[in-house]
Length: 573
Image (tube, rainbow, N blue to C red; front, top):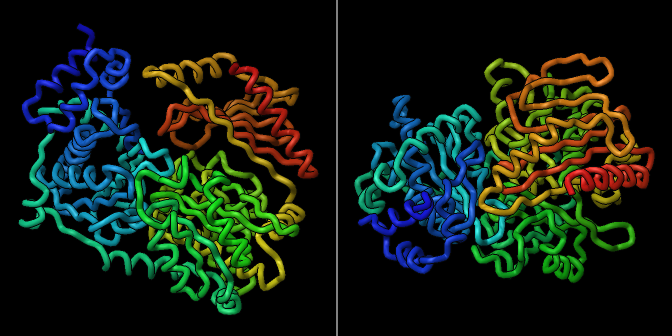
């Protein structure tokens, strides 16, 4: 019998299998292709935790795979004797999120680990904050961020408030692999664990402390006071930002927050959008109607777990346009630096952090203003790691961190991207430029005039099938075995292979170290200074291609992006 069928039968025969799961498995009888997909392997546990489609099976998101992962995290904590410090658990609005959060709490409690469980859904950054606020050793967040409704996920955090480091995730993954998913997991009744104190329900006190820290990140209160009547449209896309974003905007002084009623109710079915992703223009359609009716120049959309934020701003001709994550990141960085300089409050040894696939416009802004820029691997945990290192060394002042994937952070109260603080800063920045008779689109034009035109594009190649991981690996190996010496006619100056940690200068053959952790990423730099990055996604069956270019004009930069993308597309077929 095929191994996947054996595992399928073993699940069906498990005496403690719940009735709902058993019924779903029985309905799959004879559907070999579906069973192979669901039972040929396990969801991969990495630095981003777990993420997958919900359903029965070892390769799906369900109570059993979530409990299995939590048992691995519990063992990791127990081996270090840190169980008394506890683990805090949060969840978003997705289908089954509360169920998975309670299942995780039950596993930890059964292993003798103190649990703090939020009373209802919370943004991801609140979870990151709560870990340090409660002095916990770890945290768990049940969320699939901006993925479609069929998905859910599991993120594991450590005591610094950032997601697990690669070496930590590897050890937890090893424990998971050595633990039987059906018989090796300890659990208990969550209600009983709450009654006897092993699980403590938390809520408002943590929220208030978090919102206080967010509010402290305001740069120019006078700009808000002068523009308190600014009309800002917000949509939570049916997620956790519905409570926190309007609340923080009101607290800092904005009086006209216009919310999209159809998208403010928590709903894991996401009835008004196909993809609850704030980078997609279509999620703003309902908000755009309100903006036009109310004369607003700014729309803000937060994703379901409120760690990412997208914005739409009005152009000179009255139309609206979406700003990319890179454009928003560069605008915020420039605004924060300018606010510090104009108020004479620039801290000592200022620094900013971005991922290697985020715009180089940010680097030029920092260079011109005496701010050190750190480039890190993709994943906000690496931005958190830079903050942690500077705090441990006792020097350096963190100004801002961002990723092109619509994630931003100001302040060190959290170590993950925060759409709540970003929404507040975007509204403040909009108020500042409003005082100057400008919208954010005008501000972006001025920024490009000052620092040059940058253009970025991300193209994702979706890999299908239950063997998607193997196909992705083969594709990356193909790129490594035949590296490009030129891309669309542009000679390659250097290739950084972050898996080997080597930088190779093509003209001289000189080799140096990247200085960053090992990661399956190839980074090409052309002689003209453009960048092409190739990396497999850590959470989805996709290989991503990033194009980061600069040009003398916007049109020249756009043409470069198109040229590079066409070249790569032809190579991958």
